[in-house]
Image 1 (cartoon, rainbow, N blue to C red):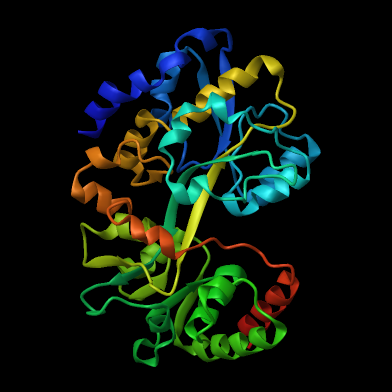
Image 2: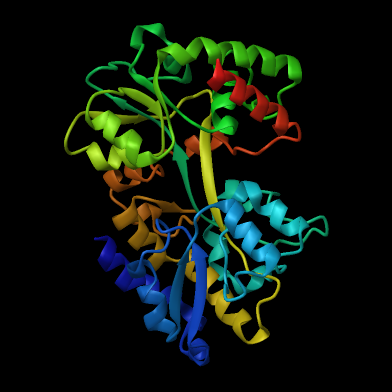
Amino acid sequence: MLGGLAAGAGLSLLGPMGRASAAVSEIVWATWDSNGHPEYVTAFEKATGTKVKLSFLSSEDAQFAALKTGAASDWDVVNPSLNQARRYIKAGELMPLDLAKVPNLAHMYDVFKATEKVKGEDGQTYAIPYLWGLNPIVYRSDIHTEEPTYSTLFDPKFKGQLAMRDYALESIAIAALHIGIPRERAFLLTSDELAEVKKALIAQKPLLRTYWQTIGDLTNLIATGEVTAAFSWRVPYDALKDKMKVAMAKPKAGIMGWCDCFAIPASLPEEKVETAYKFADYLLGADYASTIAEIGNYATTSSIIRDKLTPEKQEAIFVDDLSVMQNFMWPEAPENYSEWLKVWNEVKAA
């Protein structure tokens, strides 16, 4: 169904893209491997005659450093996260965007359309959110008969079966939610609040099977029954849902959201700029949305195909109930993040 939708609707939505960009034989897209499988960009290549060369990122910091030092001068379009976009903007690494050249922005969900995180102090927009998801609690539904909350990850009843990510920003914020700090302030903790969070995390530590570092390791721990609930990415659920009883919880206290953005390096040669805009429009169009929903179980920031998806697929990519967006928390390092890192290191050393 998704393939037919892409073929029937997506190419027509490329509209003015046509063959006008055929003069540009190739563009290089720096992105994550989960966002840029070759089949995700096939329709763009066929419609424009422009090859999309994929350059996979190792980390956000590495992407920023490569732009800052000029080490990635061959990148034509890049992939800052929504929460880190301002770092790139302040450093002058991104080109201000002419949004009139991205018609599919009209289909963007309001929560992404309204974000200020992609704007500079000059009021101009420098990045476009295009792909999003949420980081749930993945759990064994045959063991946890009630949907877990963040407090489940601190429950002595499940000692030895729990896991947290080895990442100060998210783990400290989760502990803050657990002790009752509202989500609006979960990334704005005072020194006194950090001290209380530290106590909660130290009390939690003996209950954990591990602090996971790679999602593959966590998936294996859930598969073997060593972990029954963990703050996670969705990967273990997708890998194990047909093999065992697993589910994803979306805590009402606040859902950790992630969002990737399209951006153009400030140094992009003028002759490639129009093709870059066409690619931005493609990322918000039906072809990309359909293919990445079918293969990757991810949703774009555009509603362009939502109402044509089956209820099962809508649920799989978290667009069945759009009220979930009202509970989004976008992890963002606070100004006192050095204090957070100190607390996290002390917790792990305790």
